[in-house]
Image (cartoon, rainbow, N blue to C red; front, side, top):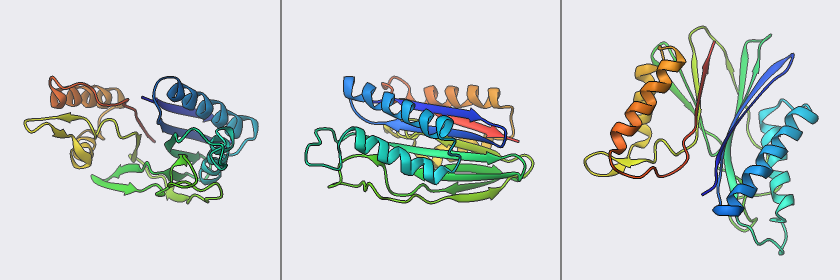
Length: 215
């Protein structure tokens, strides 16, 4: 199994928040998380890139180049899904870009989903990943009492319930809608409680990461 990563960087002009779900098993999975962490830090901190779509594009290039996935020599067919937000505090705007993973936000009791591009980071060229792919930015005007969520698929994919089925996107969204008005520490406790209640005696399927934030 690979690993989930969350990353936050605060600069004078913006806040970058990223959530990444790496694939792979054992040593290859650990190697993928190392590549993701080091590449993200270099792109955001050293190169000072604060454009989510460009961060994903550079991350894709870094992963594929490191693993030689754009050549016939590639042995690794691992990769990652990711979602990134850049918050411009002076303009009160949030810009989002995703590689498979979405952004969920709730305002005035209405839930909104912005889907990520149907393009992962890494993987071999012959499958679902292209070195030159350009990701899409989505910009939202930040309003008071908005709640935003970035999450990997571990929570919604958990098996449980009477029929031992996935918790599902629908249940996950309904959970968020029922708790988004609470302080974030209480939201965390509710999500953990509901997760374990649903899974019962079933094993945890995957890593779980949910990052929630608001203004």
